[in-house]
Image (tube, rainbow, N blue to C red; front, top):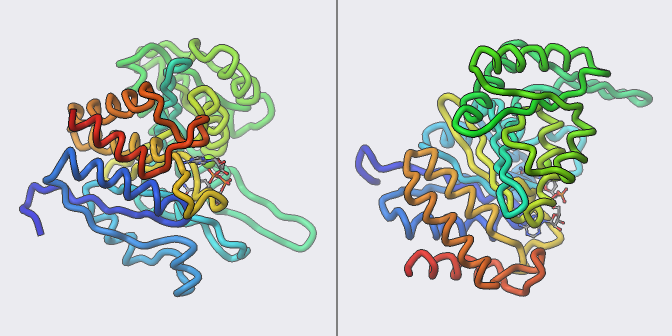
Length: 324
Ligand code: NAI
Ligand code: MG
């Protein structure tokens, strides 16, 4: 065990390609910050198949004890009684802000997705002939995500509020709260209907800076925006709360790519850089980002980017760039 000030990182690989990209990200973090202490937590489909439980309260407690969590992805089992592991973690650790930078030659956008309510509140009723999922928008949830987005936008350019207030009454509340928080914070804002926003972000990406939106809209918008920077293999994210934080690639477990050493580890590596930045180590975060850019510029690419490098080879490339 390390001393009192040694940051402790929970490493949750999860399933599928999570088990390939997270070890690469972890190795890079360990190389650049030999003082970090890592400990594993096993959750997900594999665990559920073996033990009947995908995640336990003890796992949540272990994660709460960490200074930050590095997470891969979990596969959703085909069982109607199963509740999403990552949704439970976001809720129990109160990771209310999901921050998804979409950064590349074509875009420099940060999507701020509300992470605890909306359609993912878990209030559902399933009958044989009809099923209902409740979409909850609260003042508390909307205010805190709007404040988070405004704090981010203050150091940048402006805020776009993505919503569907033309149809959904709940979004009138969300939009109005976001507008009043923006005004209070002195952040220039505009608003756009989420469907139009999904297209416009692809057509005019440079017109966007920070985008705030509710849970499912942010989920969909970030996969859409991944198109601007080379796909899901490139996008990192931070799930941030007042007490805990979890960093993960935006992508899932991509089972059909699992075990083949073909997954792109960049989203996971960049998530590691976000983790360091959150712990206050901006210098090493910037170094990792620079090393990733160098490797890409050198032409080393996984298949999703049109190359033929393996997951491990990409990791070695980034380690090499860091050592230079
Ligand atoms: P996915 O993100 O796992 O994969 C979609 C497609 O994107 C893949 O088939 C692949 O072509 C590409 N892709 C994603 N990541 C890549 C990478 N690192 N390198 C190269 N190509 C990559 O989404 P999908 O297929 O909808 O879901 C698969 C499983 O993952 C499901 O069980 C789903 O529930 C779960 N999932 C878990 C998440 C989490 O744990 N946070 C998030 C999203 C999905
Ligand atoms: Mg998603």
